[in-house]
Image (cartoon, rainbow, N blue to C red; front, side, top):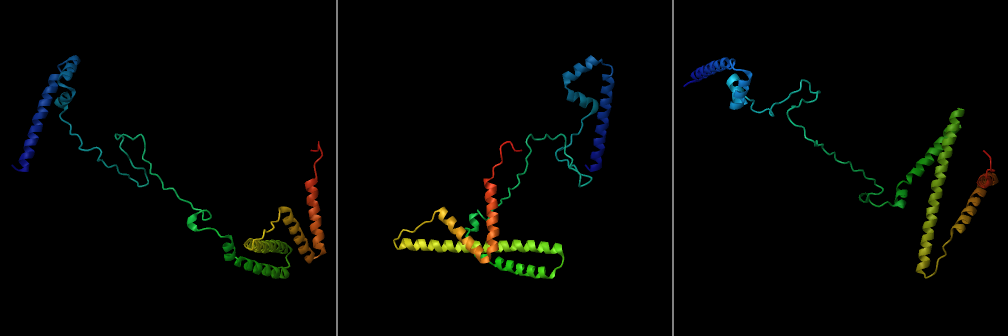
Length: 241
């Protein structure tokens, strides 16, 4: 039997079923609503619908339906028949690990002396900047520019003096430590200075350095020191607003 014969037989069967359903409908129109309800309960709702309207072909797979977007920038259309889970599966972003090289053992141990030696070239660059600023200060005639250059020069000089002073103090401490170790090796008890002795030595050294710069420098320093002492000792009278 070829395909044409199969199609013809199928069409004949469909026509016969349609005629039977038409006859059933005509008979059912003569029944009352109560009789129709009893018939529906007796044979079942599914058989009742098939007898009147025929079998409805159910789609094979609703879940396999692909919803396409007319525009790629629009949100994707989802089926309303598919239940939404109570807990959404949210992808967990990988936490970015931040490392501080100062406290990370993988970066090695911090050596202050080695660090200072490696960046010692900054002092040379600062001295070059100081010389360049002094040369520019002699040439410029703009008052505003001169004020800015003097401030910058003062700041660089202070940085240079602070770095030089810190370096000298470190060398002294290193020398003192070596002397203490040597005294211990020789079996002698070294003398450890207290805070008051260290403070007195620092003041004596400071005045000696100021004396080298001139008497005016000492007077300005003493004046500033007296002003600081007065501010510390001053107490506002009671009731003063």
